[in-house]
Length: 71
Image 1 (cartoon, one colour):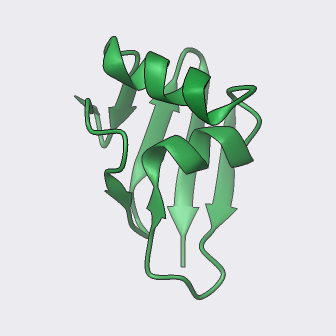
Image 2 (cartoon, one colour; image 1 turned 30 degrees about the vertical axis):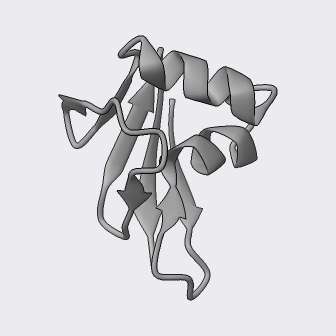
């Protein structure tokens, strides 16, 4: 399922916050855990940095969910 997320004028969103805001993870701690074990990809690459800055134009995937980040 592909959705979009707007940064609404912000330059970026930390990866763990994005997972929480989207409702993909119930808490920030859960988001950090799924990132730690390599379940999240950014632009097709496994991302292990919890605070990775997600920018407009990037695509984040977790399980069967996918989001395209827009400005």
